[in-house]
Image (cartoon, one colour):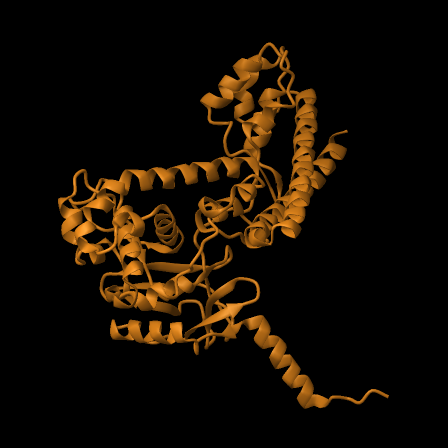
Length: 439
């Protein structure tokens, strides 16, 4: 007979399992000890938040006390924030102020991050730089083999992002060269493309929104960035309810929770009601079971199921374009969006119904035939996207076996595609039920 391990053993096992679920406290790690000391010197009072490693979200912050709605989560003094004001008060300031045409606030911050990272031990911001990610998974950083496996609309945006960052680098090279008197090493080596890509991703994924007054030494682009050490360890959850803003009285950036959080649980903030494609594009991650997730239908996919011989085809496309019905057409957890269904209803209008196109855009029912054809076309597009997603998942699975170095990037795209597949399968089920109800 198997010997019972007893109540003490069961309690210990429960505590071990709970500890794993809650997260592993990382406060003892040297980089976090140094960061907390550095922040304390700048006026940050130690809060109830601890850096921790979580099994599902990776690095984040856990609370050491239960939080209630209305509680202050964190208050980070202005002295701890890295803004364009920080940059201008550094040795880079005089070079930025005399450069024409003026650099953007974004480039000023990128330049500062690159310069401070290059300074190493001499940097006043070293404790913060040491905890920043060494690499990112924004689309601009993904290998081309991985980008090709993204859904079509996101793939296009990923390519646009890559082009934009490259153009930013090319247009800033002359300014970088002007900084040569500050460095013993050649500025071309310090301010190379990979350095700018890292700095751009740091700012794009980690800054908080903080509006600053317009300065003449900067271009007219909005100056709304602030890097917030320690606070930026808070991860996103679409379900988190928080209030975040700079408090003019306390001169601190504050986050207040509008919901409860149990002791030793991860504390989340919400970056906004973003779908997973937006989260991956802007922040380099996806959120599982995201209620805001959508699968986008490109105009090419939309039009491939309609006969090219339809005499009104070009007129219909023109109407959809003029009324902005060729973008943001989606499938969601509750099926096809109203915009997608309306676009398909207009494309399904018969020759004798075309005069009613305005009523279609307002959501009116034109005919039983039009409704039925729209349902049929929507289902066809949904099934096409299911097959396309399944094919992409198969390719990802094969690449993960063959290219170990791309595993992290591929796992990210796989998570996005798996979420897309769930949404499309749910939509297919909804459409099947609608079809049965109308026949």
